[in-house]
Image 1 (cartoon, rainbow, N blue to C red):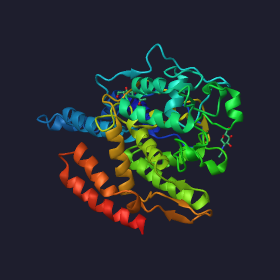
Image 2 (tube, rainbow, N blue to C red):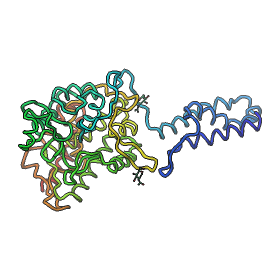
Image 3 (cartoon, rainbow, N blue to C red):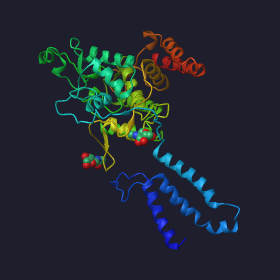
Image 4 (cartoon, rainbow, N blue to C red):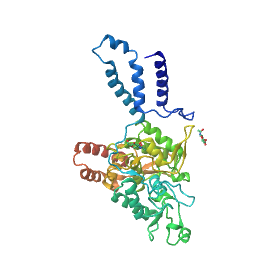
Length: 411
Ligand SMILES: *[C@@H]1O[C@H](CO)[C@@H](O)[C@H](O)[C@H]1NC(C)=O
Ligand SMILES: *[C@@H]1O[C@H](CO)[C@@H](O)[C@H](O)[C@H]1NC(C)=O
């Protein structure tokens, strides 16, 4: 092997290592060469490492340095790649979404889009009417097709949406702001003050302490706030860059604290508070590439696309219309009502995100006396026995922590 070759391979190697580093926030990231595959890098590093041993292998003919370095380096480099890129999703046999009939189309100014990124993305791809004026039946079939949400869960959510935010006569609601197209009486109904939209969440399906939306108190509770997306991403960074359930619990807890500290009208009560918690679990469960908990990966590429968060060269984010990520696979098993309740309880019992409200000033949080409303312990117990008959040990340890936190919030 000539000296010339080894200098060339060293340069390639340095290039390869540079291309493995994340972009620096202050500089636009550009690649002067096509992205390297793992195999190319493995081969280059292998070549580089075996050069010093080439003469040794003549001295010790019994050992094949090449073979040795092959196995060793390949393992290590693949591990390093995985650590940087996160785990590879297992998507065998899963359905790729969107299909050819549902290409992305950016919303027009008259199309309604709102606080729920999942509904926005379904409307942007035509799984829901592009106008964003939908019926309960539209939602049930779209969330099943796009995200594999169980029918019991989607029916409950859409019934709540129609009941609290919709037009009870037409069964329609707007996934964005108030819209006369959702109302039988048209604009007259809006004049009468009957809303039919997911905005004004204080009495509706949406509520305070959302992951990427401000509280209603701020005046805009439906637009994706890039700074809040960045905050959520920084929490995911503590979990290897993945938007796991544990990461989402941290997000919920932080948003709860922030609302307590900044929003004098903050209230976090059943039913809306339950739905806000559920929405966090949905990020991991529905936006993951593949089935979460079974080889699926809620990675940055997927989550940023669903939230419409586009990274700018200076490191901040801007909002662009939500879309399905390229090369994305829907979860394989339906996620239904029992799963949702189970996870909401888990969030509630493992973090300080108690129900209650600020008493008209910041930092004046008054916990809701849950013990007085309902026996949550026995509710939790009946659900857990129902869903997870096999995990008794986990269940009883949860119950212990559950009574602790209920006691805390009810005193
Ligand atoms: C989803 O997983 C598949 C298989 O691992 C991968 O090829 C694809 O790039 C992933 N897509 C996203 C958006 O992460
Ligand atoms: C980053 O760039 C965008 C668009 O160029 C600009 O609007 C934004 O203010 C910049 N943010 C920072 C923190 O410099």
